[in-house]
Length: 412
Image (cartoon, rainbow, N blue to C red; front, side):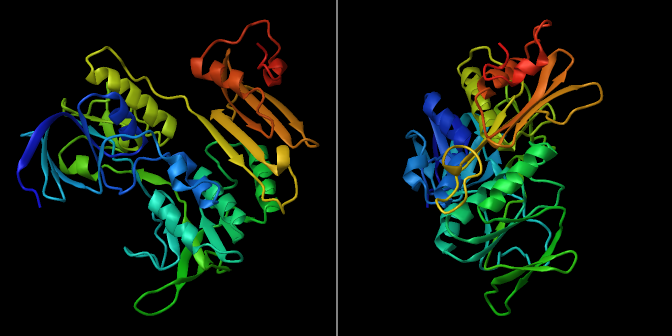
């Protein structure tokens, strides 16, 4: 065990996720400390690993110098030191917190600090590999949570041959991104893959075996109905991992509060990625984490740069197993993209195009002379132009027919 203080690094980054790895590749003289034993990887592609489409090495990020398998236990702001669980003490000139987020464990009966056998979060590569090892054809799996992560997990488990039930408390799937019509199309696609979807249902608890090592046997619903389960996946969202910052006395609200230079309440400490809260928003998106890392790269180099928030596009591709009926897209696949606010407000214009034959659906919301958001389902030919217009916040031409927004060139 090392106990001596190591040489002071110009920049120390705590966290080797996508934001930390980006900084490692772009900032000279950086020391990156990561808890996971794996090299940095693309978290967005975990569902592809679960489905068996990719092996873990395929989703690895470009090589970066990372001290792996080491956890920082304390930050000494007065002396600018970080203390690690292996006894190491590292000095810093600038510290970057890229600690990410933890999966939310819902308050369910039967779910304690130690997860019963068969209950899996779905956040890290280790989570993914443990779940993949547990899945076999015909196994009964219940996914709790119908957001982007839950939908991705349910699809991947179905591709592995599991009998999958997806339980969503809200009115429809992916409520943050989709309107009701698009969510209905997504539901029908999942059902065509064999996924049983339940919405507007609340999970009350888990029924587990007795004994020293309990194992899940069923998921109990609030109405008393039970879903038989040999595997239960918790996809109930994430929470910023801000405990280290809070213990160090930094300002923490929903996440670690940062300004436009990604600086925390301590001028020598920055935060980026899922753990950071900028202008009241915690993004929890890979695109935002990478944008923040790019801005911070400039700040650390002494060049003027400011982060003004992220306008992120959500994309999801669902591929059908060969045995599933073709429902949309080539070879039975389904492509989905959502951006901005697709839920109209009073006074907004809504333009919608649905093609049931081709399984395509497009809708955009126009607020004043700006594109507020939209959803494209099945046919994404127009998504590039629409997303750029929304991201740039450009005014729409006054003489343009709004219906042209749904053409393949976005009307431009």
